[in-house]
Image 1 (cartoon, one colour):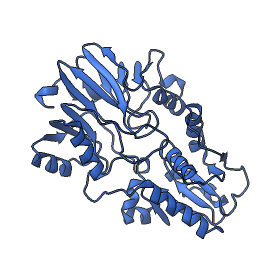
Image 2 (cartoon, one colour):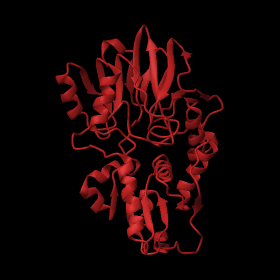
Image 3 (cartoon, helix red, strand yellow):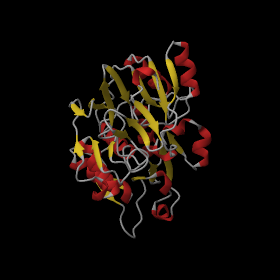
Image 4 (cartoon, helix red, strand yellow):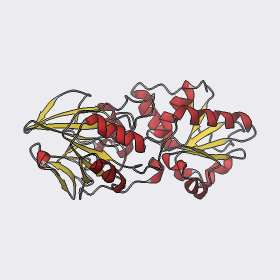
Length: 338
């Protein structure tokens, strides 16, 4: 870490804030954790106390069980200030999924922002990413290669709707991660005028129930009918890992589709047997990463959850102190989450 923020230390458990005595998105159980969002590579059970947005706490409880959110946990609204030890802490929208937040820390006049996961494209289900001025920006880097330029999501939704019209004799089976991507795809489809029922795998249905309870309207959603085939022309959304499961045989001549930033790479689509590859990501692409870093005004950048080399090269040419976030125990990405 740069001298300006030497009070943030990567440890095996995760990124540790010394003057606040808490970890951010720790991978192991700790006494006090600040959680940026409810995906499993950031939110884990067993912490003594958790600080997160109300939405993240609700999603964690639904995914991990009520016991995963300790009795001493606390919900913090966006832009609400909290003093933790010797640190001023607040949360800012990250635009990744419902409840996702950047962690803003101020200590001794120095300001650090930990992005968590974020994106810069449209998502009707959560507040947009809010750039926060800082001295140190810790950024994710899932798609930190110049090859990744994600198209506008509206165009990909139009491709899906075109396919539904062109192939009415086939049921469309869309692979989308159960938390975040599924709800975003549904909301974008509704925005585009698709008002038919959408059938959901059980894992996706459970997360949609939490979104609805938190005020996100997703229209007519239905569980897959037990023991009956899903008719031609219908749309089914399931986690990507379920695309090849035996239950998919209940669909009428299923057309496999997938929504992921990795669908920009043809070999990924071929490897998954995908006929309709939709490049819709819940992470910033190359341009989005560079734009976001520039908007923070940070003089130091630490890179995590992705390949750091290309970003380091570009940022160093701009005179910034850019390096990987060493240690911290961050988990590798799971492709279906992107």
